[in-house]
Length: 313
Image (cartoon, rainbow, N blue to C red):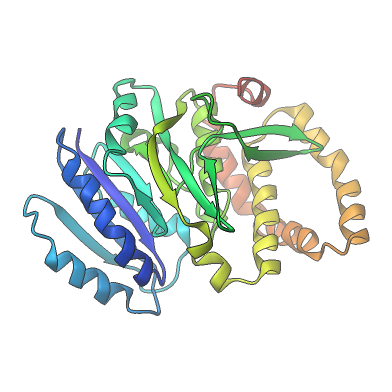
């Protein structure tokens, strides 16, 4: 099985210097098909591109195809990843963030699942480094609560999952293309991987969690918290939570619950001075025409109901 490892980058020179050797080690360990590495730089302002080129030139594996793509301007996660996917040649794409360091044998447990033609994506076990502690992540759960999808970390005692992370997971390219990839409406970050996973589930495909495919994810070294203020991050997260509901939820009862709960959510947000919630709503509202277009396009593939999806996980 041929694979493409796609790494989106923004100002991640130091992270790439630390983690690219681990990626290369994993590629060299993989013997069941051809592999390529595609790094898509999202208009970095550090020396990322030069650092990547220097490292690539030092690689002595002549069979490994390595591509470096450069965005002319900063486009955000979804658009950057989608560009890497378009340029990829593998049957399966592995998405890795720059702050992710894979174990050398992480590929085979992931890839074995794709023998099932209905499997769209398989997520890794994230040994997430947070405030000096290691938290095991990678399996996601969710429930419909007070008019929104509320997601949370799941225990790693099962292989079913509501979504896989766009920073450490494998995806079948043919299904990715059928689903339309990551939606740029979620740019610059958050919820795009949950959205894609949920659309795949509603379209009848399978999403799995593989605990034997292990990566170390240094979340605190990522770029988001360095580039954006806490209030801006919260606003974007709220905005994208609205976008997710408006794109994906087709159950009429759930749509009604969303509308009924909105006034109460606004009152609570105002009372606790949560301006990010209010701003997030209006930023989503501005995008509403595009959201409806996306929703109509995706609904042509949906064959499962929202409550069936959420009750099964």
